[in-house]
Image (cartoon, rainbow, N blue to C red; front, top):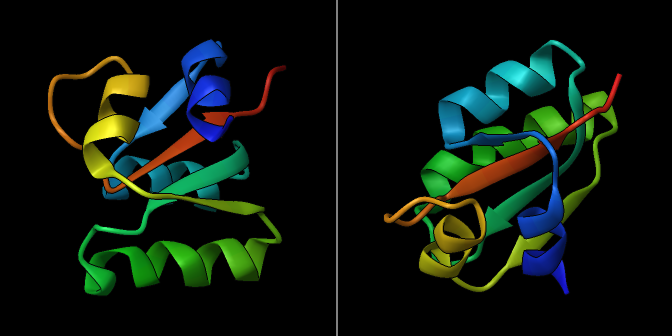
Length: 84
């Protein structure tokens, strides 16, 4: 279910840095974090989401999240951007 929503999203940010930047700029509808990603990296995203009130959905696999985003490598985090 979660991966399908990412696949259908019109606009995404992929990766820790891009996702954090989008969250900070209030451009994000919801964030997806891979459970198998390095906790030290994802913790910053989780804290920022909590601070900004952005919902977080946890997924099992970085590889599957990367594929759902349309990239060939794994993704630790991704976000669906708000539609304007």
